[in-house]
Image (cartoon, rainbow over all chains, first blue to last red; front, top):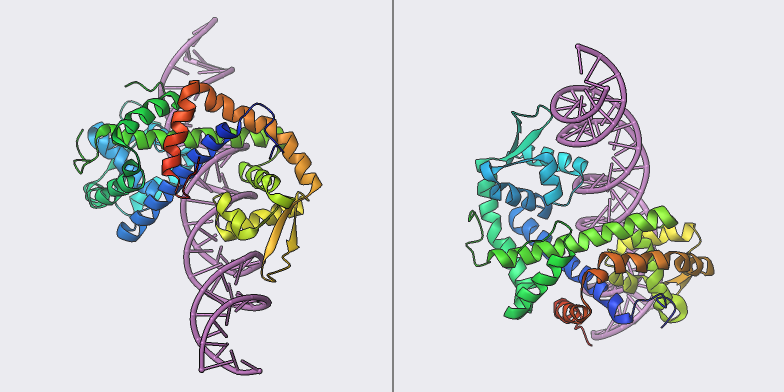
Length: 154
Length: 154
DNA sequence: TGCTGTTAGATGTCCATGCAACAACGTCTT
DNA sequence: AAGACGTTGTTGCATGGACATCTAACAGCA
């Protein structure tokens, strides 16, 4: 039982990390599967549409968007390619920086997002929030906020 | 600002889920990168070796192992292929079920694991545990335990 | 024994992703 | 004004994972 981790991590500390992994993977897979069967929309695509919908002018620079959806720049390029092919997103030039591109949510994209959103939210509720008590959500939010590198403000 | 989520999730609830995603992805990437540069060992490989080391007889059935490392069966087949090629793991037949196979940790695998473990544990500490207070670890463990489907016992 | 159905792993195929390299553009210095 | 340097986004390439499918082997029942 002590083959490893005599290096300063207690069994509990290691367990916490494993639980975090498991929770995130389990929820992610649930959402992915549900969105796919119900709306033929991968989770990553959903998250792009969601971020764009929340952004002012329904648009975001590629770089900015990549950070928000936790994807590499090249990964996002390909993903936006696909979404553009489906007509859910378009690319527009950036006025004040000729290198830059905006990914812009189209009306079709907004409609598709609206369809899928109930599935997404229901999944988060049933696979995550419902399993915690009310006060616990605030607690876990505070702790996860500390883990967030981008200075998690309240 | 309320383009979506009038469906019953508060902004905070949605934030919690996003923070969980971000935390897990950030830590995972850190570990992957560190293990790769320092030991040329992908995170998934490390986790396989780790699980085998903890298992009785340093061996686990393929199916069982796949569940523990959160991989599909085919994914694990390929991964064990690679580890076997490197000599870190071997396959052994199962006495009481001729269909079954054990993945077994070799001495070379154990050595490689021992080399990489400090890097792994240091990563978890610096990217995760150090960012939380002592009491918080127990708290978050309790909550994440509730999220774990496999009846998280204390 | 001979069927039927189920389970354990391995493979063929496809697709998403990351990294390194690149091109185009911006910024800063002098 | 001009070059050095950083940034932005796209591409070639390789990797790794999932799904569907396949084979072998078990279990149950007639």
